[in-house]
Image (cartoon, rainbow, N blue to C red; front, side, top):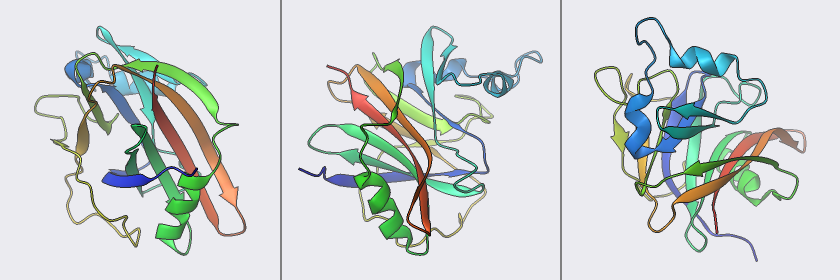
Length: 197
């Protein structure tokens, strides 16, 4: 039976990846602390899908420059299972491209690392920003609503992240599908955060 997805927010990327991290640990992500830039750590990660941040762990989601460089990354939740989907898509019909990305089978997706969320809040924000403080982007709560009909461009220079309550979920398994083409004119990348049993 196909999953039912609800759109809960969108994130703007200029090509940089996003971090998903327990909200309690986001303040440990610092893009310029005494010259030690956390963002630089990502550039040396290779095939790794997560990294230590303070006393916590973060996984990389979003930001596949092959799909699009300057791009929206759409975030969905499957209400029946609590799965989060972070999707970057391109195609002549944006809404149809997103739907195709969400329907695409996940059996061959790459297994990523486990993401603990002991605080009950999941923060998703640009890895080029601090997790908290003066140089952090604001984090918005989920805003369930219609799937955007067009890709479009942001209306502001401020690009918020998301702070998502996880309910009873205290850890997610990650499943990753990088650039994938469907037919001649649709492509996508997708990161699934699946509640861990």
